[in-house]
Image 1 (tube, rainbow over the protein chains, first blue to last red):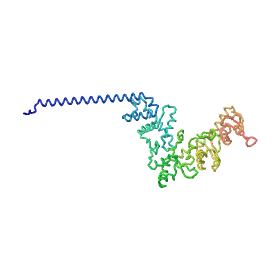
Image 2 (image 1 turned 180 degrees about the vertical axis):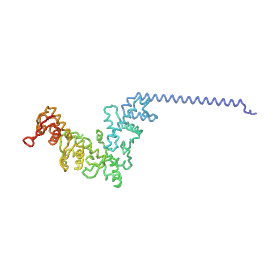
Image 3 (image 1 turned 135 degrees about the vertical axis):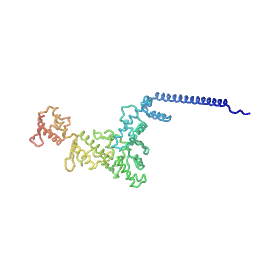
Length: 249
Length: 179
C-alpha cells in the first residue's frame, strides 16, 4: 500500500533542499576564493615582473612595446589611469603624457611647412632631437601610444596610413581616397606631376588637377615650377624628409 | 648641411618648391618669412648692404638642386623686407635694394656707443674714418655702407648729437661729435 504524503515527508524534502543549497553555496564560495587567489597571484606576478624589469621597460623601447602587448593580451591597460599602482611603479603615464605634449608642440611648429600632416618617422626624429638630454629612448610605437592618448582631447589627432608610411594628422581635414593615392604616389620622389598622376592612376586630367588643387589649398602641397623640363611639380613636405624646416623657428 | 663660405644654409634652401612663389596664402606667408630671415642673416654675416635684383647673388640660386628664384620672387621677398623697414628700394624700378639688418635708428645707436667707448665725445672724425679707421676695426661699423652711415649720422645730427660739415673735397665730410 502506498503511503500518502504526510507532514514528515514534507519536512524531509525541505531539509534535503536546504542541505543541497548549503553545499552549492560552499562550492561556489570555494571557486570564487580560488579565482580571487589566482587573480591575486597573477597580479602580483605581473607586478613582480614589472618591478623586476622596470628599467628595461623605461629604457628599452622594444621591451616596452612588448610589455604593452602582453598587458593588452591579459586585459590590463597600464595607461588607463595616471593614478594607482602602474603609474607609481613605472611612471609610464607621465612618460606618455609628456610625449603627447611634445608631439602637439612639434605638430603646431611644423604646421606652416607641412600643412598639418607629418610623417611618423619625421615626427619621431624631431621628438628625439627635442629630448636629446633625455636618455630614455622613444620608439615609433611610443609615439603611436601617446597619440592615441591625445584622442581623448578630441583635438583631431589621428594616425593615417598612406602606402607603407604612417602619417600623423593634426588638422581636421578629411583626406579622401584620391588624396591618399596621390600622397602614396608622392612617397617615391617627394613630388608628383599632373602627367604622372594621370598615367599611374589612370585618371582624367580634371580629376588629377582637382585633387592636387585641394591638397595645395589645404597647405599639404607646394608647387615647384623650376625644373628644366618645365613641368610643374607638386611637392609634399609630409612625405619628404626635410625635417628641420619649420621646427627650429 | 650645405654652406656658402662660412655661412650655414637652412634646410629649406634645398627644398625645390621654396624657389617658386607659392599661390596659397598661408604657405606663401611661411615661405616669405623664411626667405626674409635668410636674406637678413646672410647680409648681416657677409656685410652686404645692397642687393641688385638682376645681378648674381649667392642666395638667389641653388646649383645643387638646380633652382633659382624668378625676378618676381626676388622682388616679393625684398618687398616684404621693405614693408617691415628692414630694407629700402634704391630706385623706382625696384632693381636695387638697400638691406638694413640694423634699422637706421639702430645704426645711430651703434655709432653713439662706439663714440662713448672710444672717448670721442668731443672729437672730430671724417666719415671715412668712422667706416675704416683704426677705432672701428673689429666693430660692426667697419666697412659699413656709406649711404647707411650718412643716414644714421643725419639722425644723430637732428638730435643735436653731432654736426656734419663739408671738408675741402666732396667725399671728405667731417663729423664733430658733441654728446
